[in-house]
Image 1 (tube, rainbow, N blue to C red):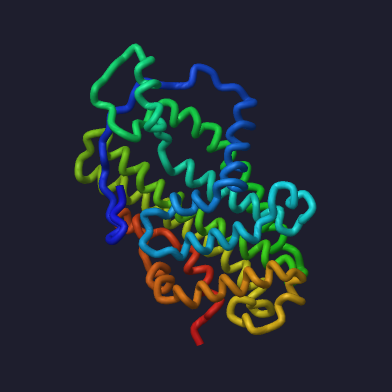
Image 2 (cartoon, rainbow, N blue to C red; image 1 turned 120 degrees about the horizontal axis):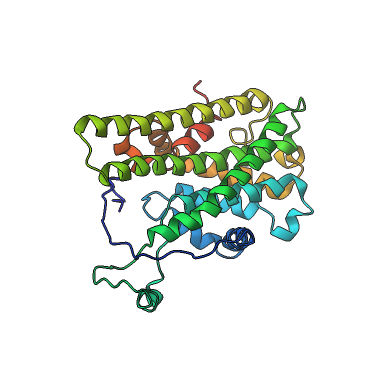
Length: 311
């Protein structure tokens, strides 16, 4: 549970029913893949609200919705090659969220489901989470996460490796890095939660607890370093010649070759200026288990504020 004001998290221990999938088939992967597409195409606005419901500031919700408005539908994606990758970026944020949260039995169906178990318990509470089923389903999503992440990184590598500084490809790279930032922020929180869970499930000495916290923080710092490397490559390629966020008064519609894209850039620029103080604060949040409740927008802030370098 997360306190929206302080960002502090507390653990709530609940009983887990002995419930699992008796059979997993390869074609089940298609079912879960389709589920992600349904969220993206039919329920994305609601998803963003749930995704950042613990955040007092609405910056990330609004930014993610702007990216969704720019993204083509599944049908359009086959025709619009340039923004096809944006769908994969948004899918990555959805899959990462799924990987970092537990599935629970729908409250209306909980009694009916649990009544069929041979083992009965009176201790099951609301939002009951079957641990075994969670692990089985997340097996599929872990594979999907790896596939989608590789697609995003390969496309980004292709754009950054090209010698051309064509502005029309700037938007694809820009959205890919923004999506990576959001996904990696969520991943860093999950890393802390994973080591936290390890400490809670076993009797650890004080030294062992400190070592587990250090391991988690080191993994998060490694993610920071890799993201900053990608961000630096983008800046070296584009920031000297193309800075649509800062220079939003220029005719970027001609340079970006798309009215919809130029409108997106203007909206993002306006949002960053509106939330400038918040982003300044978030970009300086240090890696620490006690700070995980303030990781949202941390990497996104570092990327976006790099378009306004100190004078």
